[in-house]
Length: 116
Image 1: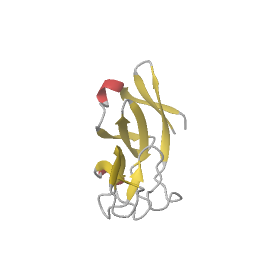
Image 2: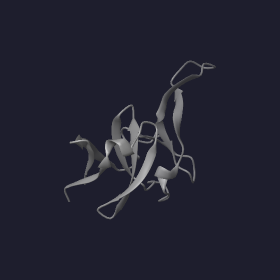
Image 3: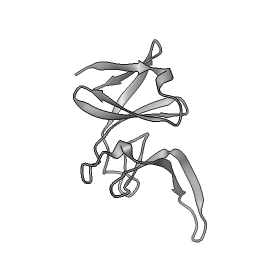
Image 4: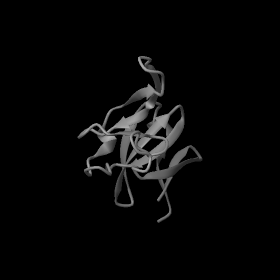
């Protein structure tokens, strides 16, 4: 289906999530430290609008009784049932084989471009 320009990079500031419509799909656009990610706004669990969920972090692997926060701003929680997904990979935290579809994002002449 090709490449689709979705707007100037300034329209997608760090820490902000946006929804755009591209080639008949609704995508969530995420800026994590000026790196851009696009996820299909469809949770694989129950078809929820996953990109409307909260973005935050998670607890990293640690010893019993030890709690180490991490990945702040990189975890998307589905608004319906709380399933958590890594924005950078689309993989769920509980089973990496369960994924939200991701799309390549590049910056060309100051514009974000999505490849579908």
